[in-house]
Length: 253
Image (tube, rainbow, N blue to C red; front, side, top):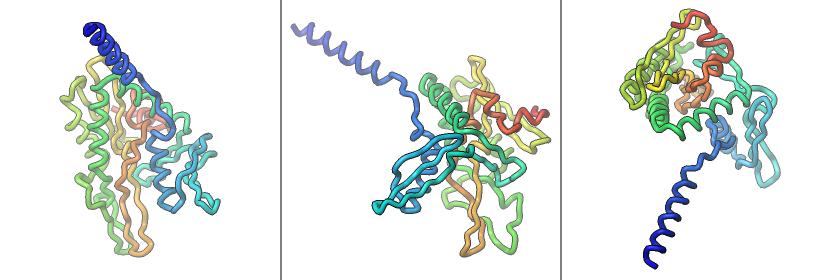
């Protein structure tokens, strides 16, 4: 009888272990863009109620009095302006955004090495903000204001160098190369895995730090919260080069 009970326990444990390891695809609510917009709408005093997707994404909040407010756009794609530089602005559809996010979400579930690489890059962008102060003098005597928690400040070369430093030597990584384009005036990384796959990683645009002007002081407040743009950390070279960027500039090497 004891052997029978022990066998049942082992079957139960095995069943639950297998169930726990079953892959569950991500939902809209799991994406960084949804979370970012939800924070914004709730910061305006509207508790989250629902979202809508179309070409883009809009997250709605609703008050008890029935009034509502949404952040984002259902009818336009997700616009990114890296470094607030209009010359580098690009737009992707919600379908493209979610595809890139979903593909990497599954890869991280299936491969612990990929997950550890992503964790390292995520940490880089949490610690680092784009160094506008090193490139541009704020007009009218205004100042660039960084978040007190920032550990690193840099431009694209610095982000790429950090990726090389932090990712090289991780399990499953054969080499990390820095790629640059004179046309785009930009740098990023290729993370080559031992199984032959390549992760295309632009940590600068994955972070996508912008800035806002403080209406009270006139100072420029640099965005510290990463956007984790999924098309900027992907195995998909085509998604990585959307908006005719990166390898579409034609001189990446």
